[in-house]
Structures are given as C-alpha cells and as structure tokens.
Length: 470
Ligand code: ATP
Ligand code: MG
Ligand code: MG
Ligand code: MG
Image 1 (cartoon, rainbow, N blue to C red):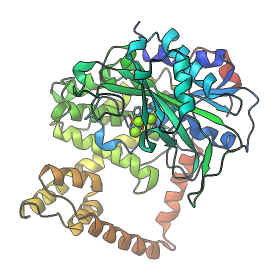
Image 2: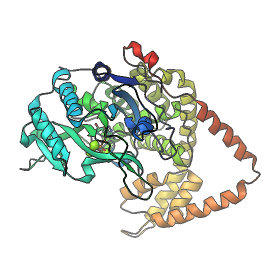
Image 3: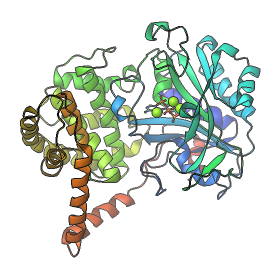
Image 4: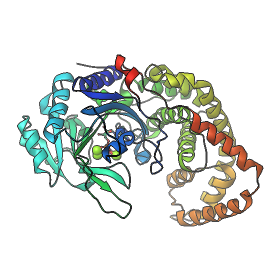
C-alpha cells in the first residue's frame, strides 16, 4: 500500500506505543549537550538514560526527531537519499529489551504494518555479531539476505564521545534497474540499488575522551529509521525528493526559475533544485529553533546552508530574492506536524530575507573578484589562501562556496593558507573585542535565541502527548 509521510510517522509511533514505549516529542535541533553541535539522531536526548544517570520506568521510548547533518552535505542533491534536515523515527530501550525482542519488533513493523515484501528486505550485521545474525534467521530471514559489514557501516556513534555500539541495518532493494549490475551486489555496495532505511544500534559502550570504551550500565537499544526514506519506499520512489513532502518544493523551484526538474538527473539544474528544496527545510527549522546566521558553530551551519541555497538559485538564473517563498512552501507541507514553524514564520522570514539580501549584494561583487583571480591562475594551480580569505572576509563567501566555484573551474583551494589567515583574524578580533559595545549587542541576540522554546512535535493523533514531557 502507499502511505503518506504523516501516516508513516503516526503508524511508527503508534506501533511502539502499543509495545509499551513512551512517546517523547522531538527535542530542539539545538541540543542540551555541549559535545554536540546540532541534533543528529533520535538518541541524543536520551543520552543520560544510556549512561544510567536517569532511569525510565517504561520499557522504552519512541520519538520522531528533527535532525540536521552536515557530514552528508556534499552529496545532497546528487543522490535521492541524503538530506541536511530529516526526521528520524526511533525506538529506544535502556536495559531490559533483548536483541531478539528489538529485531522482532522491527520485523513485525516492516512486514505487517508497512507490509514490505520480504524478498526485497536485506539485513546487515557487524562482522563479529553472530547473535544478531541468528536472531534475523530465527525470524525467517533467508541467509542470503544477510550481509556482514565492518566498523564503517555497522558500528554507530552519535559523536566522538558517548554511547555507541555495534548495529544492524535494514535495507530495501529498489530493484536491479537502479543498481550497478555486479554479481555480488548487496547492501554496502556503492550503487543505489539497496536503500538503507533503518539502523538498530545495540548501544553497549561509552566512548571516553581518551578513546577507551567502558561498558554502559545496561545493554541498550537505539534505533533510527529515516522518515523520508521510508516515505520514498512506501510511495514507490527511488528518491525522497519525488515523494509527497518534497515535490511541492521542487515544483516551486521550477516555477521560479523556469527550469525543468528531471527525476533521474542528479546534476545541473535538477541537482540545484534539490539543494534549494533541502536547504530551505534546514534553514526554516534551524531558525525556528533559535539559531541565527553567524560565522561559527551552529550559526555558521545555518549561514552556509542559506547562502548555498541562494547561490544555487543564482546558478538557476534566479536574480531576485526567493528564499522567503520557500519558507512558506515548507510551512504548507510541514506546518501541521510542526506548528511552531507557523508561530515563528515572521521571525524566520525576517532573518532569511535580511541574510539573503546581504548575501546577494556581496555575491555579485565577490563573484567578479573570484572570476578574476581564477582566470589569472595557470592550469591546475591552486587558488591562494589569501584570495579565499578575502572572499570570506570582505565578500562573505563561505569557504565551501569558494571551493565549489573554484573546483567548477578546475582549481583546488589552498585550505591551509586560508585557515592560517582565519586564525590570525580571530586573534586580532579577540584583542579588539575588549570593551566593544558590539560584543554585548551580540550577546543579547544569542540569549534571545537560547530562550526560544524547542519546537514540539505534535503531528500525530494521540492523547498521550500531554504526558510526554522531556
Ligand atoms: P547513510 O549510510 O545512508 O549515510 P547512515 O548510516 O549515516 O546513512 P544512520 O546514522 O544509521 O545513517 O541513521 C539512521 C537512519 O537515518 C538511516 O538508516 C537513514 O534512514 C536515516 N538517515 C541518515 N542520514 C540521513 C540523511 N542525511 N538524510 C535522510 N535520512 C538519513
Ligand atoms: Mg551517513
Ligand atoms: Mg549507513
Ligand atoms: Mg546507518
């Protein structure tokens, strides 16, 4: 059957509630955890339960978590499975739920609720994890649908320190037509045939700053299912950009730019249309959760995404400000599930429009400067770090944007030279900041941002949300 994104979200959460898991609202994208820049997984808000600092009386928890990931940024728009903002459905347990139970729940949900055909399902387990392989087999999974993978794929950690452990991932076979055709094609292959949609992590260790990995107090469970990916599967699409939520954003980009989107073209205009649609969601959710454009940390992530969207608009030939219209379009498709987007729309659009205008002006000037610099280089010569710094400092070009344009013209950028100039500038700024009125002005804004409440997820039809309190 086909299901909408909203239906999948509630089916998942209702399923785990029926198993006794307590429903938690998404936490803010700005985590209550200094070791983490932005929420990147459902487990983030449960860290202290894993560490045994907090105890949950229910058998486990479930949630639909807003996530932002920047590690995938280069691939966004060039494939149909990675987003910078996405929703992660998850269920969690802190001792008391065995691997056998966890896998049985997962298998029941995907085969009986989502009714995915069993011959299309594939499972990976960590190289050393015989136990999980035995569990999948006992549930009826054929041995040739199980692959062993190493640490890169099947050992999961939210960040450099904290809870982590071996995992088992579930993949959907999108069909031979989208694959590479090799004889050994299986999950883990570089091609697009197998789509990873759910990761079951058996969180067992607590990685320390020094790299040691003591056992956590319990054997835990942490799972994450990409909502966008499950929606693509349920809607028979090979890309989530072609599913119910993203297609209206793609369409808006087409309308504004006059360019045509081609669903199996992952380059050029189609890629730019995807990047804008994707980045618009991140920008909206980040600002709504209190992040403001800046040159460091979260503010920089936001600024980079926002400017990159504007830049791709230019590549599509859009000369006028356009991002505000995308904010409205995101709200049209996501406002039901996240009403705080609607509450914050004035704030968000004000910030987006101001940043876009500022960037447009500098983009025009900076582009002239960069093109001059690039055309003066010999073939294969690097763009000097000083030019990249000039673009950053005077024209507001994020370094990634400079790299992207330079690479498009066949030149690398001297990143080390750029970093050295950045470090010098920071030292100068620190010396000058003492007694500067602008310093306190900025603090007011930062504090204001910190006070904005977390966006609460209310997009399911369920009474117990009243009791769901983080
Ligand atoms: P991939 O290998 O495809 O990059 P991952 O292994 O990094 O995914 P996990 O960290 O295991 O992803 O996250 C759990 C689930 O969240 C994934 O199985 C996937 O469904 C979803 N997910 C992860 N990253 C993204 C992303 N950038 N965009 C959309 N969904 C994602
Ligand atoms: Mg990834
Ligand atoms: Mg993976
Ligand atoms: Mg994974």
